[in-house]
Amino acid sequence: PGHITWRWKDDSLGKRHWFYGKVLRKKATMIDLAVTPYFYALSNNYGNPEEDVFIQYNEGSLTLEAKLIFETILDNGPMDTIAIRRATRMTSKESNSRFDRAMALLQADFKITPIGISDSGGWRYAFIYDLVHRYYPEILVKARSIRDDEARDTLVTLYFQSDGAAQMPDIIRLFQWSRADMEKTLIHLVETGIISNGIHHPTIDGEWFALQSLIQ
Image (cartoon, rainbow, N blue to C red; front, side):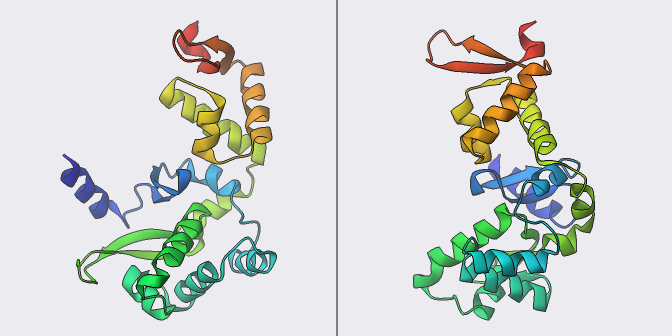
């Protein structure tokens, strides 16, 4: 039942069983901690996370709201959603969409992550957030030695080990990578014998890719 799995997820936050946040398609995602560095290696974090935020904001790839939220948590330590909204002066209904977009952007780019539950607010339920590089410093260390192509190969291989077969547009929608990067990844996985291409579904048009071990 949903309420049981939801409670299990809430109780596990902060215990470092896995990484949790709005990652794939900016939706709630649970990621094995051994896999998380491969996602982090593909994020817009290159050196010092605090400097990265400043650079991204100046380049226009990070909104003012996202910058304010990051800096607020940086200065104050872990904070729940209600406290973040108050500190950044985004408590009005008019600011809801800007605040939600900023929170999703920061999670998808591995800058903040939920680490617990607070009984704040009218519903007495709010996520507590901390900075990824402060709460999971080991992820940054492990990600430094991972090349972009290695990260993509690993993540797409795991995807096929889970789903078995897929079409390229489906994988692009999930990971939100460019078509060029996805084509390069799929070609390499075909060349190394991990997946096969040129497969056709009896009722769905288009080319499919499938895990090689499933069609041998």
